[in-house]
Length: 118
Ligand SMILES: Nc1nc2c(c(=O)[nH]1)N=C([C@H](O)[C@@H](O)CO)CN2
Image (cartoon, rainbow, N blue to C red; front, side):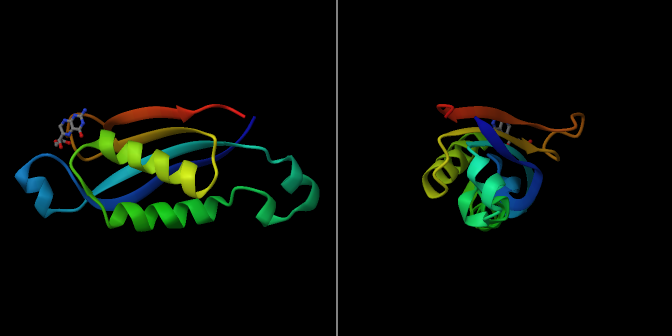
């Protein structure tokens, strides 16, 4: 299985369980690894033959910036489901962090893996 990845995608959104968090926008930072097969695209150099990471980034920026989740867990599950369904990705590993949530920590968040490798 091959992987197309996205590292440190940062998006501002409403997220958090506390009242004050519902009134501000905070950054979330995503790392994604998406299972795919790059061999046809490598042969043809046809972007239509591969998973277009720009299309994934554009869709996630739109989805996340318009969302208002309480928990990072829920956001991570929804993002994994969106990428798998809309981009025909059979396996995904996703890290979702809130770097400003805990001042004493560089970041906090979740890592999930969904689906089966090709
Ligand atoms: N496992 C989680 N723990 C916490 C979350 C969360 O989404 N998942 N959220 C918070 C608060 O919103 C926090 O980010 C504010 O400092 C606390 N713990």
